[in-house]
Image (cartoon, rainbow, N blue to C red; front, side):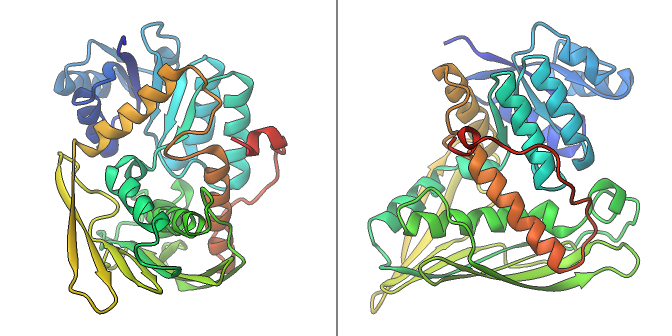
Length: 353
């Protein structure tokens, strides 16, 4: 199979990390990079041994040597460059959050549908084999009936009102930055527990802090009740270091993911802790290649299969839309600022993907 030629839009920290993943993947090669300035693009290209450095995003989308685009811009630019990449007939992997709210995600998916290109939100943790192992254990009833889920993702960032994390105009706030990991994980687990790919919440109660200076959600907690009376407690934040674990509690035991979000960035081992009622805990080891290379290869294999509209094995369109709806609900209930507007509806055929 010929390797897919990747182009990266943006040259920030996550773009640097992703470029290393492409270099270590089996299905991709890094063909081009684009920045707002030629100098930044050239510096990035030199670091990652990329042959073509573009001084504009438009130039990369016009590059015939690029098959698939990774969009690593700040959040507010995801919509524009996803739509433009789709119109340029490029396949797309877009950093999370897909958009600032659900209706932007709708418009992006509509563009991918109309132009028949692959499109996925980049929740890279979904591509790690520990998630497949977790799903296998839940489906097998290893911990009995799932009753409660706990997930957290938070860190203590330097308090800089000009940074993308705390800047309202840049889509700042913990829920958009890391809370979506937690919502996507508990929706996945609650769905698998009921024989579905994901579950939608029945009820949501939220708590948290809107920064008096930043105006964004700086730390937040939500209690979510799913069908089957599965209860999930999730938390995220930018101003406190959290446990950053996932724990699934069932009628027959529990399963803990000790490093759910960024396991094996450089490849190696990670552990799941299985505890059955009345028995000693068991450590289950999962070995994998580099995390972002795994993500590149999930995209590469899916595109190679030829059906670009079929549901991705990592994050389907319907899953993405449900996840950002839940993030919207969390933010609305906290009075976190966001332009919640209505654009175009998604046809039922899209939601089936």
